[in-house]
Length: 90
Image: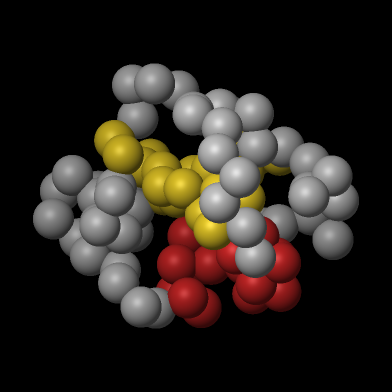
């Protein structure tokens, strides 16, 4: 996964962990890869618990409340999100 570098908004332990693909304000984004990709404002592989089944952490900006939240990406997810996320560096 070394092809993916950290970029954008930096992860902070104060950010909401949207484990169910939702923001703390109640906005939900399940199973909407292209919509979620448009919300990505940052990515890192160095934050949070490191596991072989994780490809990193994506930082999202909620379109409802404009707060940041994050969740882990699977190993292949960064490639998919990079294709759709307009802010992801090419």
